[in-house]
Length: 496
Image 1 (cartoon, rainbow, N blue to C red):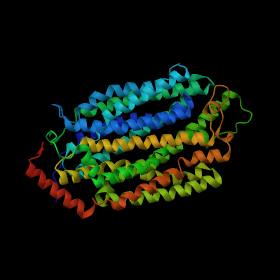
Image 2 (tube, one colour):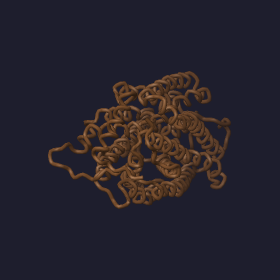
Image 3 (cartoon, helix red, strand yellow):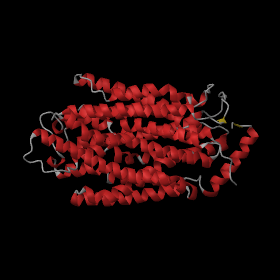
Image 4 (cartoon, rainbow, N blue to C red):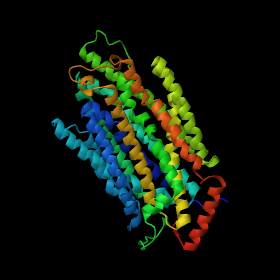
């Protein structure tokens, strides 16, 4: 039986373009902050490791708290939408401050970086949790909700590619304008320009969505009754949701494909003319050009693999169970990572690895889309079983998983630096800049493993919880029908 649809095309585009802007901002942080802290600001690796981990422990508290705040209060302008406006300008300012490179001593620089990084995470939570809860209140139609999420995540992925393009374009233009052989000054200015451009465009697109989205599923605020389960208790007792969260945590290694790409570009591969006999200035230019080229190769693989998967996800999600899609693509990604690792071990030839890197990026696109749709189904299940629907808290769970995944990936990168003995101050200094070919082969392969076998193992592990996930097939159809009937009985309001 075909359900009524509610979301107009203009509104779907407004939400998705907002997601595009948000993707630009998040990628500016997640894909480059570890390289910026380690190689540009040259902060102590142990400090960077502790900062990433401790900040995410705070997010473990911050995200659910934000979800409960959003679920508990409804304003005249809606439950979710107002936070888009509240968070837009602060998150933009903090993103630029993150890449400002102030002229401070090392201790002061670490304090400054810690304050900005933690504040960024808190404000981003304020923007992220309500925004990705919106599809749950834009329509009661589960299929329409899934397609809206799918389209939004696809454009969110497109937005995440914008800083990647800027990394390449600025890398081609800036050396000619700057006219210096100082690799540190070049990289400081490069990241600052990237952050300013990303913020100006990204925040405008994100904030624009506020004016074109409507909240239709109006679930009245209910005051807690003594003795009834708390919001957190309902979340933890929802087994399907816990399986989706576990899947997300186990898939944390997938974030390395993007977060570690710039590190692999610096320390695993060199593409260009032989460096012997070059002047210092020519050497710096050749190495920076190689970094941009290698990073671009990974970017293209991500675009073709990840974004390609995201584009076809609406079709796949209509024809196949979500759990089957996850299991199949994650196993395929694991197998591809094995081939990538073996080729890297025997040849360290990036070009031969490209087809397999591309295949291993497919599950990244699948998981980026499907986890949000699965959380929506889990909230349907929780509402059916308990009579409560904690939309924002459910979205906060996904936000926490995303941040935890990025933190674990970044921490893994830092640990690899420490484990194989790479000293950024020696590799990227104003006196001499070293190429990947100056490193020992075992160091180069270890860095390469960050984008090959480690993400592959993570993909294999994340498929395991899906074998126990039951919201699929006839079970899902039965759940949706029972929930629609229950809402009629409870008098849940659906605005046109």
